[in-house]
Image: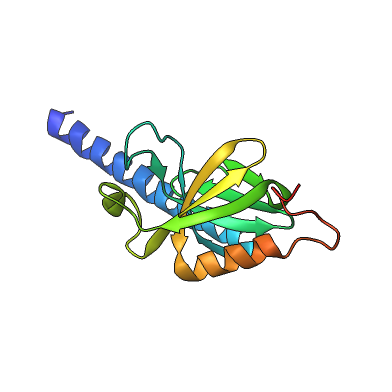
Length: 149
């Protein structure tokens, strides 16, 4: 068998794998959204370099938790989960410098404080931010706001 046929077969197999990966991402997104609405939510995993460390993802509210899924992962489980009782909204800001090309165009960066993990930086659209703030404020009756002690 000539080399060009091997290359053509390899290219065909690679194309099929890429198409299967894309289909799996679409199915995963549908499965995640099945249990409730999802929204675009980026998470800053490293803050050692200015404007770097952002990962695109999908957010979903699940009862008392905010779940974050990486956008290009095939895992059906959230990569990070934050409990509502442990998060405190601190401030918002516009993306700066390299963040503007790392994040979706209409997103704002919000900084929250987590009781267990320190500072948490998230990026979301302004309409999603309104929903996030409402979700944080809608704690169960009798629940104490973080930082109010």
